[in-house]
Image (cartoon, rainbow, N blue to C red; front, side, top):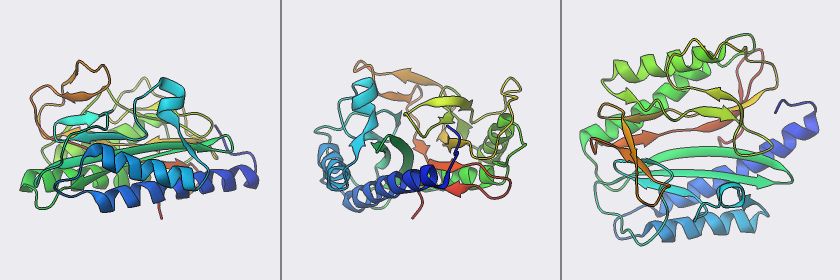
Length: 247
């Protein structure tokens, strides 16, 4: 979607704040001994308290409120009985809707003390996102975001998981345009003022190849290397983008 009024922007800011609150509360609960289902329930309670609903189960039938992926799981992990352990690396991904507007964000959270690789990988995903913000300007082409993310990730010795991309958002969970995390000249469309998108580096410590689990939801790295994910929803402007899911 593209913002056409201040009222639409305020609705997006409202759902963005709720998504941020859910992620904050879930992140605080990440510790050894907690199950991913317990963390998911915290996110569900925050959404319900603020009159929002999770988009993945509504749109795709996902069996959970949030996607919670651990270690080599990159995205779409199903919350359940898995107990978190010291050293795990947890990805929390929340997409929610209220009043017909949708926001999407993800963070990577360490469980206690993690390895140097895990810590560096999580920092890299966030750093790549921040660097990409500099080119998320009206008039730039979509592929500039992917070029920036890929350069940032490769400079740290990590890999972009090319199958998964950022996307348009605002009225439903996935909209046009697709926003790759790597340079692909086919994505030549220009970013426009008011366009609502996500930027979301999804990266691995290995070669970036993926496989789908038997549950037909969870994607994990084929080489079992760690994965990290960092995402926010934003509005493109002629200058700095408006971040919707940042406190």
